[in-house]
Image (cartoon, rainbow over all chains, first blue to last red):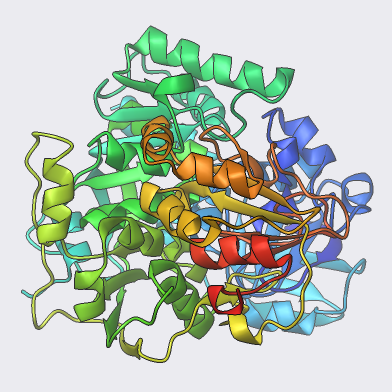
Length: 164
Length: 419
């Protein structure tokens, strides 16, 4: 069970605003985390705690393929992102680095003004709790669940491909 | 069993007779690409996986193009990581400096990408090569690192949206306007997880560079790839650049599509995407009175020689608006040289432009043309997100090279008709 504070974002949050290009001249996780959402949510990097939950609207992570975006979010402390939908490269990247995503229109809309409130997420059950309500998410596809169980694509490949 | 061109290419690369949308496949990769921003992370992943050598030294291309010429010590260090890795591994295709250029311009130009191939790149605009009739898509650095190690990638077969363009193009309207119009129609997530297949009489008459422009921006509608069937134009382009044989795939007449959209182009005028989404599109003539500070002509979307010719045809004998900055960035050293030989660069300089080196530069607010707070730019690039070209309170307006050049003269967002 993941328990933390909600950080709420809207629709079409692109990877340029998740981590602006001017911070891409480094790839150290801690550096990226420091500048996460620097332009649209300057209080994020300083205020986020390990275990917090990011909730967004449609098409989260659109635009540039920069993996620095999910890395920055994960390194900042976010342990799961719940959104109505995700852009596909971001979706791959997040699971590849071991950051789980849940697609839930009802949670995205039901908690649209719950920024800063507490929430809990049960990944395996696809359940999000907040404001005394329970929301369900689409089940994580089997292959993605395997990636998360393995700790990401690197460990999955080491186990499934190179090891064999 | 009938299949689309996307399904056929994926099936062949997965060693299967056929695939269906939704199938999860492991596919062999013909070309893997990364740049100075994404390669360092991919190299880190490659090392973590723990294999000694890349899967094929001919099938990986690394290009230094985002923050080049290196803008600061940190970016120079990133390029150094890439250069040293390419040297250690003996990669055939590492490009930097005068050999380099914008990745999505130089890979086609050097004949490194071909019809029928499966191409993945750690850059979202890798979808550009769909214009050649290849399956080509953007991935992240972890995916790319894994591909460098194994030569394979897992992919979910996308459903295809067929977009058919018929009619006659109006003056100063081309591939950029067609794709902006399409993104406006679909929205920035309208093709999420889908293949976009561009077809119809208009596409078959489009020159190659405008086809690249269209496929390039498939990602701006959320598309996984943006593909076109190869034809005589494609094959002539490829034959001039490589002796390697292309694999020609075409969609079956009874292939299954998620959606078929027919677009009549007769009424499409030069388009502009207003801040802050590429889908916020309208005809330039309806943009209103928007004064601008900068114009950028170049990028993987519109940095082709023909794009520069289009811009020069507007700027010939004219001066840009006083106080405005016009930045031209040719897509490759070859394009730069040809533009010089044709006198196009002189036209730009006489008009008051600055000519930069082939680089992604200002498109992503990297360097060589970053905007201050409150500034506005018309740009031939592909994204106008908040802060994309610099300060979060700056604005980017996306348009074709004719419109960008006309806007530079007018000092405001405007088309060639207003000159």
